[in-house]
Image (tube, rainbow, N blue to C red):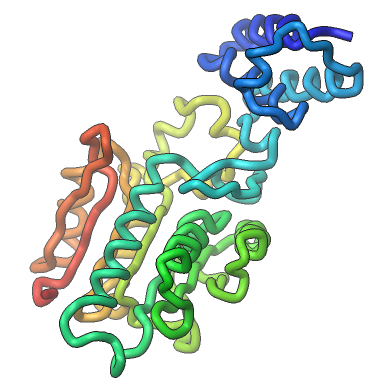
Length: 305
């Protein structure tokens, strides 16, 4: 049997040789996962011996990581917005920067619930998560609103769309795991729901669409090659799919609604220009993340309050 310290040292060496820039972190996370322990406990007891079966599973995990496979796919789980989501190659792995989209969506829903006039005669706030993938944004929003006492059906109606049957299957699994399987409706559709029964016009439109330039795909970290390309590739300038959604907003967005679209950190100006070209006269702005980088494109009608 090997010890925790010896197994980690060997794994770090192998991952460094394979080109990993986070070899130590990867090794610790994977061993903690195999042993169902936390990383702090591992580091506190490097002399602890690891049973051969567990050592074998760790060796297999390290081998997979050395090929570039994302740690999240190996573990089958990714933390996002304080929740644990099942992940696999059916959908893109949720990124930390996308949490800003959930926060902005929550704020937009709350603003409409407590704004002038109330909701009694207008029904629930209608929300759509476009390109939901594994469901992280819609599910996180539903869970967060539930924690705040905002009830599905009465206060808010959430629908999530994707073109991929496989991704929607994963999203439904995650929704059930977080007890919101009867809260979020998942619809297979290109961008927005095709049937009136699925809602709309929407007061809050959230979208994390593909925004990587086609020519930049090959230069992404090798881990990205394990993810569905269609969830990354946004065309020549990365905004092809974004423009298609923008073109749908005149019909899809309620008069006082807001659309929030995640963009790349280098797309602040180009995304605003694209929005104004498609929607002349509309109001656009860009919200930044904690690092001060462009992250969300905000689009509203000029007549919005």
